[in-house]
Image (cartoon, rainbow, N blue to C red; front, top):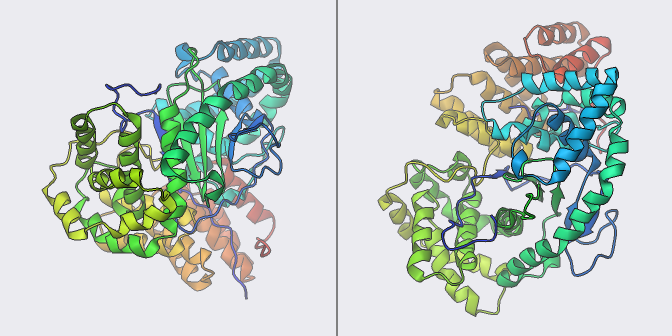
Length: 544
């Protein structure tokens, strides 16, 4: 019997001046899953303006041959308008007048329409119920969700719900509420009215963004068409805070969501930082053997204050070090060597210990006509593992790292064993089932985690992704017996029920669907999945 069940990955500067640290991006929120093995499963169909960041404006969004795009989206507009109407005020004083104009127009509609008022109240209640302690990051999961939604009025997920990023899955329940608000408040009419202003923003920032990215391309001596990544998309949404840049890496594609400030500035440095990640990922993927050689270095940076993702993934660590070295050499062309060296040392003390090596090597790279595609492998081969491990051991690490340079979308600091599971979920969501399995098993072996059910749940999902039915069933059973988180518990029962449906054991399946409803998870997608299972046996998706 073939085995295929749907697996839900739940708990899945202004231009620089000398006094600005090029390594400090406290407003950059880069959701960065594991780079190897993932593919972008969604095919976005977001209505809006689109310009390629190339030398001309030729082409359209549909069938674009180039990979860099500057876009707006009615989906983003609608969700941002709803959240603003509910009191999302971050960066309001620094926003373009357009943001306040949309808020005022929408408020007028709501005051005149009882249906719009009821629909907005439901969204606002959802917004409050899902609020986090991180006020500035409260909108972040909704941005992840918008990137994975289709156009209005349905706002249907563009990928299977089971494949949504973890933070987006947590707020998926807002979609039916947004559908009602979109219709009741006439958001399409408001979008049509403001669309020329959005289009004007695209045209205004197309040139500066193309120039900024072009500077990186020229430094790296790489033709844009040579990049192996799928695409790099920048969304302009002026109803969001201009003080925060949200970046996402899904598979081999990167997305940046940014709002211009009222003074007309756009946070170019953070966009360039994300673009460098986009450039480096396929190069790292092509040099897996060289990366493997450097993995022992991870043992020497475990006490560093940087994000746990860098401590568990050598490719992330190597690329971040190289990116920081490039930023130091390109952001301050007129800085003294002592000033640049101080910035490099700051990076090393945060745990990015290879920054010094790459910074020194880039001096020769700048003189060589070869581009980074050729030089990347040589840079890796030139790393003396013994010397760099010695440097790491002798480094006195800083008390804390620059916040939010690369975020794994966690909402609060976590302990080591919890970090292993966070990274495991990232790897699973990007397609690396074996890597996820290894990390989850490590977390169980250390026996320090407060919720072993979560580790078992990850093991079960990893087995399911690999088509191992019996192994997945056993791990889901373990998760159902030990999980303390209501959502993990509920979905363990749902997947067990689906397995029993596949095995034609309907009575057992019904017991688990009922158990899922009793697990205490209030999320709409959990209830919907369980109720659908009670109504009819689960049918596995057909192979693509």
